[in-house]
Length: 100
Image (cartoon, one colour):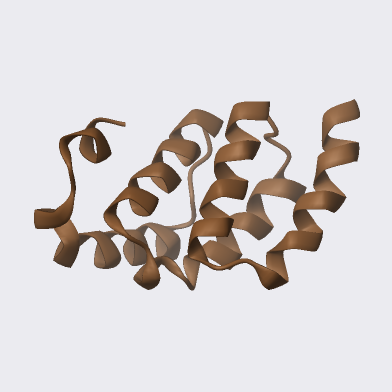
């Protein structure tokens, strides 16, 4: 209960100023901290959804890792955008990006 109360406002304050890498890092931090509150995760996913096209293969991989670690199912439009961003970059994914 303590962690979401502390982290939710901090993460929310970061959303407007974060680029794709920053949003992915916030999502990874939430995953590492076990912050599964929809009030934290949903705004992160929504903000990142519209920046997935700007992600590197590594950032795409880390974002999907965080989603899996959190045990959440992103909305279908998010998954479509992730796939659309990843497909043209597949040849640039490194083995560690694909195995994360």
